[in-house]
Amino acid sequence: MPSEFIEYRSGYKYQLASDFNIQISIKPDDDIDNQFIALDKLGNLRVKSGYAWDGTSGPVVDTNRNLRASLVHDALYQLMRKKAISAAKFKDKADRLFKKLCKEDGVSPAIAQVYYEALKALGRPATDPKNAKEIKRAPNMQ
Image (tube, rainbow, N blue to C red):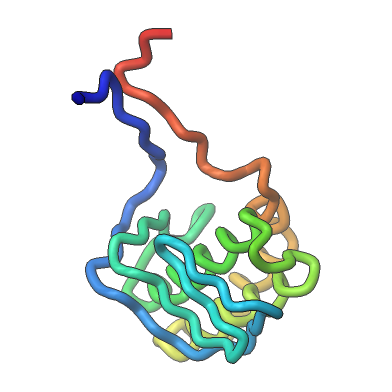
């Protein structure tokens, strides 16, 4: 039976073409495995093919030196918005990981520190479940 409308979320710029795996210091009490993100109790993070994210935030320009960090950071913040991991417990670790990955990928330590300070000061709303991407419909006949 055909559907009368589609449901979608907007606001993304990138879509992962293959799974990305990384060992991180964020270790939840229980393994998490959802459609696009898996994080186990040992800190093995897998962001799965098809995951969509919006790159860096604010005035920061996306480059090949900060995209990996933005992918990991967005996935972790999404887990916080979904309450799969605690924002109170893990937000600062996620922000510090963003800084670490940026430096590993060629961002200068001074600029990476500025990024971290901005996330520390302004990132909290992005971890709040009420700020999850809205599901939209097309056509919107309501």
